Length: 359
Image (cartoon, rainbow, N blue to C red; front, side, top):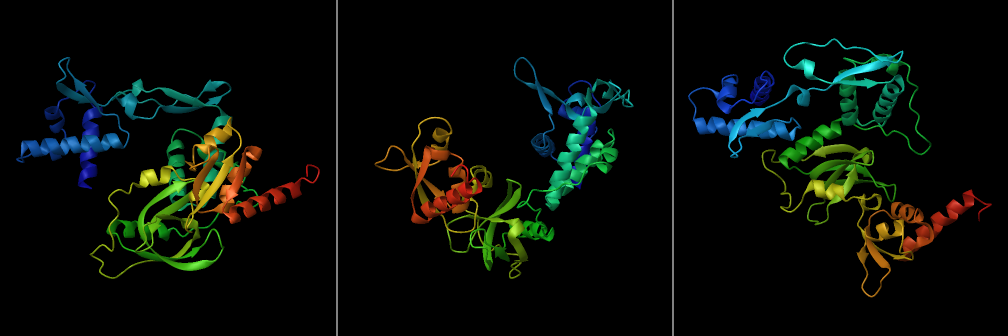
């Protein structure tokens, strides 16, 4: 709370000024930067606060002289506050109640027509319908903020219910999973849970060392490895139940995250066929076309020695990988392993059965 109070005091000190202010001028308005402490220590605290606020997207600008010396810091209200929000009525924007002081008059006006506002609410309701407790909380918070200026509640009341297509049900999730995983990640404790396997459809008890959480393709995933295993696997949170955090030696970590592991990099390159809890297999595919989407797709794989057209992929989900191949049509052909070829043939036959006139 003391850090949050410093941040609030610093933001208030910056926003009340129309011109750049030095650290000494800002410190006069921020009690945490005053007192008998070491001046260098207080200045470092200010620098840390400034950098952390910038990481949150707050554009605190450092002003320098022609010689490159820092002369002050500034946060323009128009760069910090959202614009005034308005809805078109009879072709004219409704005027918000402007506050004619503290720089608010410099803010711009963003106007929505009724169809645009309805689309925003519809999209928000679809996200809520996914059943993810964290995303739902963010959406509800955003809608409450928009409702301060826009008639969001009226649009929301008239919005039709969200219905997912067959095969795309919203999966109920246990909100407590996030809290327990957050605790385990913070203390580096092993967790165990019941997991519904994507590939076999069976439920088994797993014990893993959590490395982090990431959101991809409408699902949350836990990046973790089994004790003693080098491979980091991904577990969909919607398939996790009965999660327990290791309660032994609560003050001591159970494992160390490898020094070279970066969650952002791990999550960034994931494809549907790479997301799964099973061991990966090497899939070899021949690319028979050198143009269009096939070229881009081939770049995702590794070259196979002795072949100019074959590429290899590390695959955890053959069904997802085959669906990706089918989208490329006759530009590709699976080569190995045999189970990949069989799954490809099965999905081709199942697709052709839906269109007998084509077959």
